[in-house]
Image (cartoon, rainbow over the protein chains, first blue to last red):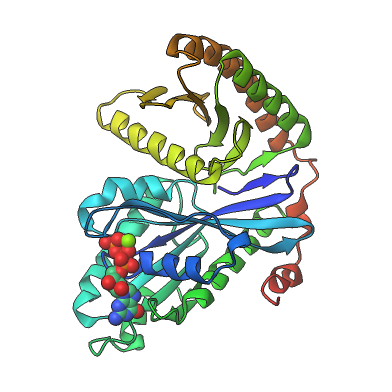
Length: 197
Length: 159
Ligand SMILES: Nc1nc2c(ncn2[C@@H]2O[C@H](COP(=O)(O)OP(=O)(O)OP(=O)(O)O)[C@@H](O)[C@H]2O)c(=O)[nH]1
Ligand SMILES: [Mg+2]
């Protein structure tokens, strides 16, 4: 749920990175954090297990440029991908303005991707959102690995609606900002549309 | 989609006044208000050396987690939480099931005093947010979003 502050002249939005365990959600945020100028970011918070698996969420506030004199600020969250953290995933989705699905390209993770996508649809529906309506992009991550499935195969399994999709190697940063730009554009466009503009 | 949270100068000033008074009356170090999605709405007191953005997001996460626990127990949301530290204590109050009022205090104050002052502040805040919500839903409000063009959005990424 976006937050428009007429006093500080800010538009605040919430983005959530979703996807199966170890697909690279946290890595996306870490790269964004490392490449964002200090004045445009806050602290990155990771609530993680000792093995660096996300336990509740990662959080990173960043600000982009101004629109009509309003600073645009985005709160980036990741969910924990491991199946048994479903209750936490539902909580993180509350009030979301845009979703990035990070798929793990490895052929052996195809099932996990599909299961996570279905889980996203279900959990959004519980909040009264439809995955077909909410601003949504897909990132095919880990393109560097030899066992990466062909894009066409991933697309067929995960992108029936033809939403914007990006190939990525998150730990190198390939595709990370393209994905972020795409979702922020969709979110702002939806905000404008939702307000009747 | 959810309705937006919107803040105008008039309501902000009212909220800020409540928050600043609460700092004084409760002998608190810091008082802040967060919406349930973790957006900081107002803060007062000794906020200089405090990462209020991070605190706001963690507070909302905390409330979301206990809210989830409450649902599993078929309880209403736990409206109040209190955490006692060695130097700092933190009192968290859900206001009108919409925003979260956080008071950080030390040994110069006491839980009893904080509770007492929070109760009154909650009532006042509730009324202010109630009014704000009505205003946000009225159709003739001046809305920056309707003026945004596609070119504006594209330009955001050209620099
Ligand atoms: N080879 C390769 N490894 C990657 C890539 N992106 C991330 N990784 C690695 O994959 C592992 C898991 O990444 P995380 O970002 O922690 O995964 P996550 O999606 O946050 O996992 P959960 O928190 O359990 O949901 C780490 O060791 C990363 O370095 C990539 O593009 N290629
Ligand atoms: Mg993670």
